[in-house]
Length: 262
Image (cartoon, rainbow, N blue to C red; front, top):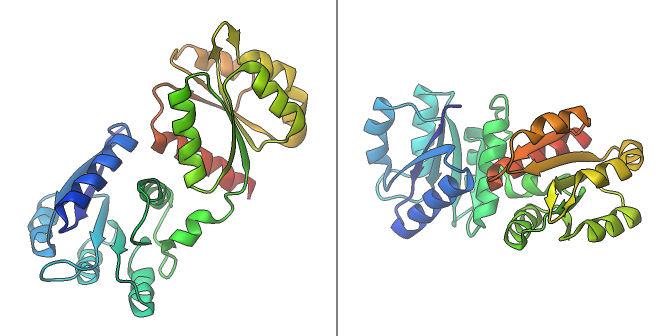
């Protein structure tokens, strides 16, 4: 799969580096990110290269971000755009909603940016007057999710990312802990690691299959061993993610499943 090319225009160098690093790490290399610090620098780069997404600050030295995005849309309407600003107003928001695919006010969490980027690029086409805003990221995100993962670092990382994007998340470090939660609660999505020490997560899938079918629970099986993908298909598991799993990949899948349940 080709990398998604993103251009960030931000004159605060520390923030620009942070945004670039978050997007590259969060996408596990799927995003190719370039940063510049002014609209004037953007034009020769955009004329020489094609970018899938432009993320621009509103206040820049010289020409502002909205003027830049307006000109980009005139010459390259297929290029998507997200406007960032710490100086929002009703007028700025109205213009941004008409011109861009995403409008994000500062300060924001890096996971919010990752969530917005993946939702923007997943949209089939730009609809004028329909730019995503922070409150849109929070809509229909109350589906309950169970994460079963015995690696504490991974479990906490998945849980934090999903909670930051407004999902209700329970976590289990053992098969028995997951069993107890599954017996008491109904879950929209069950993220199930296969290797749980000496136990296997697939045992729970068999044990709770009837309940999953009855409640419409979507099961996402995870493993570092790719050959388990075929086992998951034979078991009727909905999705398989091969480790290491980027947060962008996890959020993209969970958002897609969540949208299908809305």
